Length: 409
Image 1 (cartoon, rainbow, N blue to C red):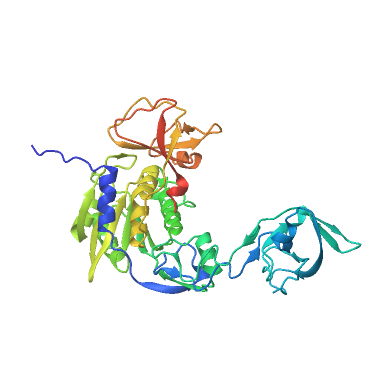
Image 2: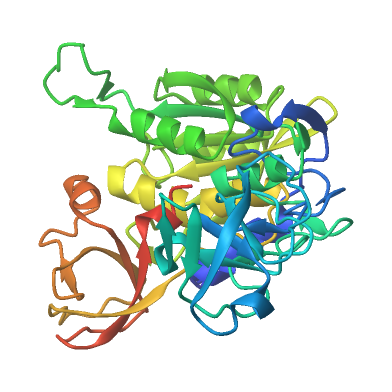
């Protein structure tokens, strides 16, 4: 009798995937305005100091701090300095009206907020009612960024804040890696598209919409081969087409072991399988391998057909794999220790990912139906609880919570 092979843990499966990933090396130059979500191909340095000159953080008056040491001194205003204007050197026993972001005039060493001053419109005299310290409310040259320093490392995933940082040092264009090319198709003769009549025994193909949205979130170029008939020949033919010109093939459905599940034999005929089934719930049937093509192979990831299983396995395994293809080093989602405000008395031998929501008291509530077919739980919830094998949960226990926003982008 053949001994049944133990399923891989989630950590073991992820290690296999990330170890196999071949990072994309081809790059292109794009406008910084159009680089949102792209992966930086080369480290970027600043050629300037930021800020490029000493400037004020507040609307107020530029002063010599020593002249205001008494805490109530009166001065004439010798000049007015808006942002973008270079002022004259500050004359002794005068102050300068200055506005946020404006360059500090030569001779001034502090700024006093306008709220701490009293202006006499009749005489033009301003009384400073505060004794400032040297440097008060002044942003110093290079305080944020020094010329020559690296501001963004290679492999950085560019978000709005990274684009703003690049623009702040004058970078109008950035070198980024090309987008991953992904092919996706769906198996199941029972699948129908929204807008079509739903025949007896049929279901709408929700996974097509979920997976396309997930791939868009990750900045992928993808080809959607649609719904493929449940035959070995059709599955093999689509795999061959999908392998051409793509880095990765993703399928949904057909990865179980029934007579109508053709993904496993099709991939083995067109390439090889390196991994099959992992000890998680939902999502046990997850396939990983490669499909042959002219001059090499395309990676293959087969996801379960149940909608929650498909979503969970994508978030936990496909997302980090695609990010690693893009050269991102840190692909692990952030998790938080949180209080469970529910009971989960029945332990499972597999690693469970339970859909939960943060309540008004800062704890976690559990969606009542954790079935792999209940997609409602993923809309209701804020994330998943990573519950280890054999673990029960009692109210008040601390659990590991991963928000959806750490898993979807």
